[in-house]
Image (cartoon, rainbow, N blue to C red; front, side, top):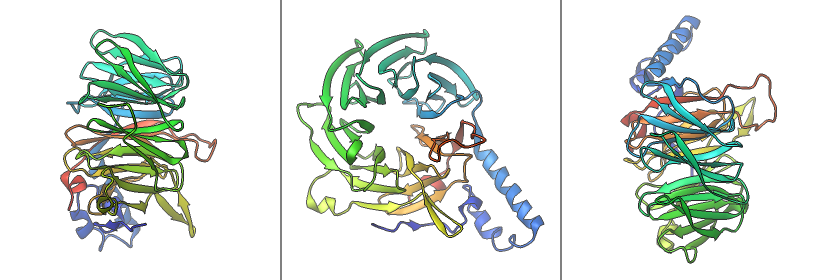
Length: 370
């Protein structure tokens, strides 16, 4: 395992994208209650200018947030309240919603006006955002966990707990093929024409969507515990995988021994309280398309930004109200959608944290490699 270097002095809560506060405030505003209060107010003011909370969000666990393919204005949200909602994040309002018969586990845009979604009812639905019409494209024999659109091949991909992925042709909304996986599909990431599938029992399959006759690679996660999320580098060199045990691994697709020597894993999303280290699942990963840096969100309520190639943490945001369930950078990398939902890591708690989505404007200081 590799230790990740932190490029910014702690505590991170004072940075908020304004590193000058680390220099000016930390040494002098430390001791007195009035100075501590002033420092907290300055931090909150900085945060409020950089992020805000969406209105009319779902009242149950938010499972997935996805920005549109070419705009940072519209956000799709899939939830356990059986709805898929479209938000205008610029004007902070919900434009529309449609329903499934069960909780919705994932969604995606095909283009600016067509959405796809799937969930516990096993149905893949499509919705026309212009005409407000929906249709059932097809089904799996078990819940659909993942829904992605690959523009390079113009195909919708679904991954299910029935241990299959299916391809769907959006031109006619018909099935284009079913391909068996080793186990239940938990997560999928796209890398150009390739799809990387993470299943139960820590299996990872790499498929070429142009030739689905066989899996290009069959791997096992280098992390020892259950896979939670996989996302691929925009430059198509590799992918990042996270687990329930507070670890992230950076993997490379090139199978040559020289390239495979570069892979590594590191600990994250862990807190020490009363001398005891608490380890949290890493639920969400999202890449910045321009810089190949990535954000991780954990059940500790924190979001970290990482430079995977240089093995550095670039920054950490303030702590959010509850677990981070989903993350998504906008296509231009200027906005990060942060979904917060309690995921029953400690069973039932009282009071239950409120489900919410924050829209954060991110800066180059937070996302660009140093």
